[in-house]
Image (cartoon, rainbow, N blue to C red; front, side, top):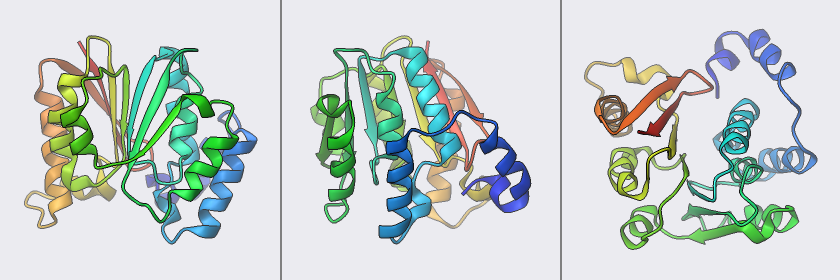
Amino acid sequence: MSFFEETNPEMDRYLETHASSESEILRKLRRETFQKTTQPHMISGYQQGRLLTIISQMMQPKNILEIGTFTGYATLCLTTGLAKDGKITTLDVNEDLAYLPRKYFAESEYSGQIDFKLQDAKEFLRETDEVFDLVFIDADKENYAEYFRLIKPKTKSGSVVMFDNVLWYGKVLEENPKQKSTQVIKELNDLAANDEDFENLILPLRDGVNLLRRK
């Protein structure tokens, strides 16, 4: 859910109608996500999908990591900029929903470049020796600060890392939040802003995207 969707739906429609259109496979996936899942709002939105697409296409990364696949919408957006010999590793733990991203990954022209793993992300990051050009995290908020710590050694100069939902419906403005997820998101935003190895900016897109670049 975006800020404008709730407070100014006319502006939200304006933003969508003045952005490039979705591909057919993304339209189909978005429609089926709303038809077959109980929390379709978890899908990366149309506007956010455009951001991911453009960043990936600008970077032409060879190695992408995504934490939190859900139905695969963001995954397919990120694949569009992959180098010809590149790959995207996307991680999730929801076995019941895995059939849906697998279906659309198989239909995608980038199917051979998508490595979909049902695996805990912290476990993966502790085991892998891969270095990533582009990382997108949209998963369990209670682990955001830990993901940041684990991901940092897996990046290099020029790597881009993005965390979704970092405004958390405005809850980050709470001085003493009781909700664990809010506490950890605030911790992440502080870590990102104060880490001298990164430069960052929080984009007020949908529920907030923290965009970081390794110096």
